Amino acid sequence: MADAYQTHLWGGRFKEDEDAWMERFNGDNCATAWLIEPDVQGSVAHVEMQVECGMLTLQEGQILKEGLAGILADYKAGALPYTSDYEDVHTFVELNLIRRVGDVGKKLHTARSRNDQVNTDMKLFVRDTGRGVAGRLAHFCATLEQVAAKYPCIMPGYTHLQRAQVVTLKYHLLAYKEMMERDRRRIGNALNLLDQCPLGCGALAGTTHPIDREFTAQRLGFSGPCKNFLDGVSDRDYVIEMTGAYAMTMMHLSRMAEELVLWSSAEFGFITLDDRYTTGSSIMPQKKNADGAELVRGRTGHVYGNLLTLLTMMKGLPLAYNKDMQEDKEAYYSSWQIVSDSIEGMDRMIATMTPHPEAMAAAVKKGFLNATEVADYLVKKGMPFRDAHGLVGRMVLYCEEKGKAIEDLTDEELAGFSPLLEPDVRSAIDYDAILHMGNKKEML
Ligand code: ARG
Image (tube, helix red, strand yellow):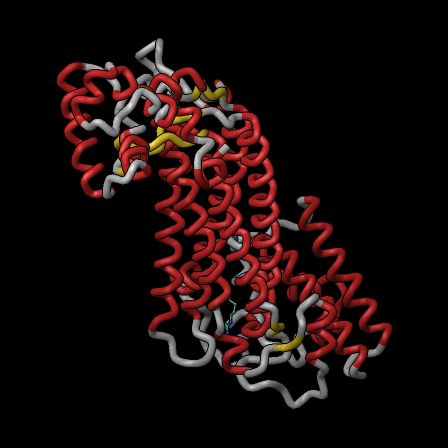
């Protein structure tokens, strides 16, 4: 059998080489190159801790740290490619370190297992990317606020996608800002919970070496080490939680995307999307499709699927590490990319769209969006609300038959429904006026 340690981090107890299938199926097929950087970061902290605890000399520590930095630099420059020859990124980094600095490189992995190592790498990556997504959400919230401030104009508010009551475009956009704000806080919660460093948990049962887990935790920016070794190596809650936060964000973005698609249709005509975020048709020359928004809506499903992948991956696993957990990488990475890209795209689409307040105002005029306010007017004059509701319902039926809006009824027609309906009802149900009454002022 070939010297397994030329290509693997293990081999002494094996008589036979890996089958080609096993090698292919077991490896991550270069899909996790993005873990190289956090892997090096974690390894540097581990080396510094070993020096601190007298397990490596200062000089050995220096050689290892320089070697690790060199590997990362060469990888980034394209001089040292991560290929499918390596079982995983840990193998790639350690074998190249040994090739680069010689035997001292073989000391790196003292008091460490790939199990605490990979969970540390993932926590660093999830933390970093989670912070990035939170930053994008904060930027998007600012965009929503800016655009909202420009459009305190009236528009129809809907329930069941039927015109319901008058609202403002400003207020409608600010509803999404609230969702994005909660999404940002959800990410913050996930970041708080992941704030414990797995390094030093070893394979599952700690180590006999005199290590300092507080030191590595602090070096890597965690508030402290994981409390329980078994949990420390096998906890993937944070991956699930962060993906869950992304799934929720995608659900919100998808709802918004759906509205952009609807609003930009000829049927609504409420907005025109900037050309840059739309595409045309290969056959119909007139088409301008809201593909950017549609893809945000469409990609939401991938993130939901990833969340289910992760939950299912974990559900039957005994303590502690199991290889199943390798599958968290792709599910998380793809979710992060989708959510990050989608927030950026929606931010740009909202920032560059052109709203059409006239079309929104015209839509408000049709569909009796002030019917509730007619009932409110009657209530203020002493009629019980349920009776007012019935009376206004009959008025709406009448108006529909006559093709009129309530405010277009004559004084006689109004009085015919109730003596309480005096001409001043018209100013009480004027759409702009409505927004200055009661707590509706908040929508301006
Ligand atoms: N590539 C593995 C993963 O991503 C690293 C941990 C492997 N540990 C092991 N004992 N085989 O989960």
